Image 1: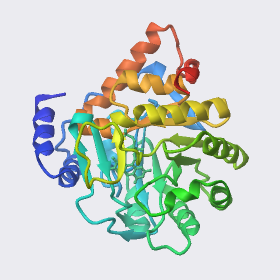
Image 2: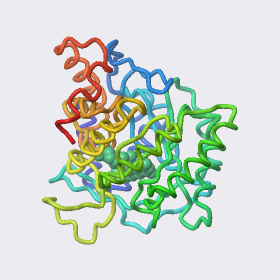
Image 3: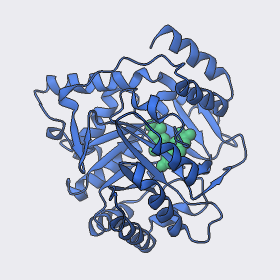
Length: 352
Ligand SMILES: Cc1cc2nc3c(=O)[nH]c(=O)nc-3n(C[C@H](O)[C@H](O)[C@H](O)COP(=O)(O)O)c2cc1C
């Protein structure tokens, strides 16, 4: 981390977390954040459902909810980024405060509740991007919608011309009952409509499904079965957890989704179990608690073909992306593996 970046991060950590995040996005947009040194590592190039990635390391949804900083983010070393969640109508989200840092745990709790400017403004921004790179949109539903399934379809139809993939997010804990859409019948109905509408699009983007870490093995069985039946292009495992056990920080009154280090093992367990059931028939994207190249490598060994991160960036800055890229590349070379695909899922039993 440069002195400038480390001073900036310290200053931002002293302020209100949501304000600090908004400042960071504005600073990125204005070119005020020093660009991390990025390099392309030949052995990290990979392809996932037809998307050619320079790196398997992506930016998780929620960091750039309104597609404000797509161009600068694409220059930070990510192989792909995901904006949103985007809902049909703009909405303010839950009352503040709704973002809490837990430094002792290297974690964050958020209960934003899909605050965003809505699909019209965000799709216009996506259309204007000028930097090459893989960009996806995280699809959400409005809080007061009387047909949530239609909401996902509307955002897909509106944003598809300007993105490379879309993620059906049924795993945010901050919109009441949204996670119920993960249940077998509801998920089946939802994905049926989304996949049918995708077939009618000119730009038939790959559709990913993002799931929660708070699942039982039976639920993982059901999700795997439906993902195969519906020919989902990839599964993103996982979103934040509502399980706040074992934290060192005081989390009284801080209900919401927990991310960062305490999520690592839980999300990796879901990932490994999905990997065992799907056995590479559906690619997996591992998310949850990645803050180092070693963490990212474990996700690959547990079954991920690519990874995403968010909270690690809050504590380590954007330079972390290059560190992870470099670290994975070196670990692959040390193991005499020329391709990422050689290690994907190779140790999943360890994490099940
Ligand atoms: C402040 C915040 C907002 C988030 N918003 C979204 C969102 O809108 N949609 C989504 O699918 N995930 C969202 N997430 C979840 C992340 O994409 C990611 O799945 C989760 O934080 C675990 O990864 P991490 O431990 O690297 O942060 C959000 C996470 C945080 C911390």
